[in-house]
Image: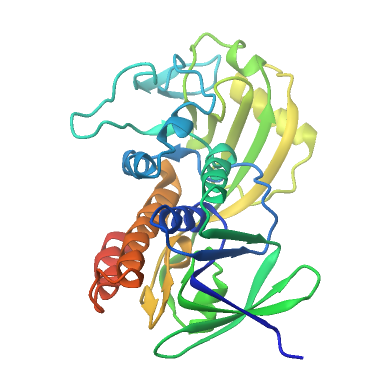
Length: 355
């Protein structure tokens, strides 16, 4: 039995922040697009926690900057980075950053870098995309195969019940992460360092982490031992949700007692906490051999992966999405020349290079 055949202008594969930003950028321009994502639309603990200046400028274009600014992080919370031996030990240094209640900290942009973890950022972009009549979001749907000719891309997708359909699109964009199915189906290689190190992220709730010490509020605390930095404690919401990053620690198999020991080493005293989540991840720095193949494009981690410091991966990927959004809109709406999309690889790959 032949799968159902449906038509769209752009098929977006992957429903993380890059895919959602692309769908929103296309929908804002009135371009018909369908996004497929193999997971559901729930967002768990954040991988990305910082929205950069340029991403905020692009959020202004969409009309969602106010939502990103005002999702709930306290405007008067200090954003300093503090280097210390422990919260009750020695302060070794402090990088001061003004709180969000102050004006933008650069004369070159009306925006500034903002703490907005993916737990809150993704739903803001997703909910906006859902308001656009030309956008369709299909969750629990995975890409099975794709083929292309000079005029279209044909992709077979499958939902969680095993039902398949063929989506015929003018263009397809793979926003499906480092282990990209789209990139694998195209046979595009990635180069660079695929394993710089492995780190562990632990999420806990604890109000005591703000009061058990005398260092005052900060955005992050970097803990330094005899061998150098060993952990980073970052506030997620400016209240009681925290992320602990264990540098060079490669296992997510941690008991609650072991997490308690980590917190006690950080604080210099026992701390009451609620365990939320733990994950182990690989720090990498790679770039694909090419970002496009005919009518198919790669964006975000599918094209380039970076160490996550400062949200570099997501913020670079968001710029991929916005670059593609206006160029694809120009072609589909007849005001862009046929070679316009060739500039995508020329412009974005040098910016994203891992060398």
